[in-house]
Image 1 (cartoon, rainbow, N blue to C red):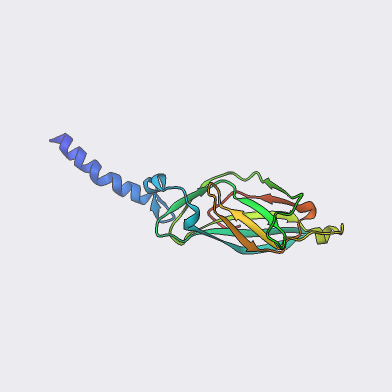
Image 2: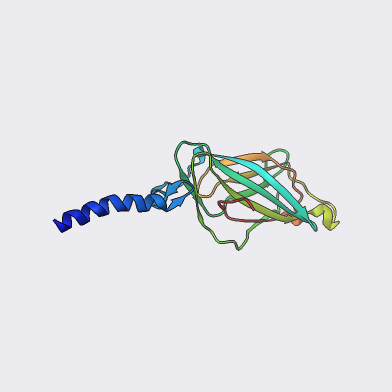
Length: 168
């Protein structure tokens, strides 16, 4: 009889405990089984930008446009493109040292990443080369998003953060 009561108590308690451990509105147990985001579930956008002392910071977001949660983790791919949509030769994209985390995106939720670069126009070393567009690919997907962006990184060098659950 004690075993039955103990078993029933566990059956009732465990789901309640799991529900209380939330992550973006989903329980910890749900986030463990949430699948990786597929490119078709996502959209990409320029969220904000900031500048100071010749440094530029641009925040981008991937938005989950599907009706199910999914996860992203790692660094996106980021490519500067010319006006014809081709990669600009000589560019260098490095990863910063921020820790990589798993971000669970609820339906409509966002994961953010930031690029940082020194603006060529403030360094005063002509000629500066500008991008017309950028190609962004979410981590572990093959889906590329093309956004219009006029960026002028010095020596075409950009530092990239991993995706994060909050905007800086």
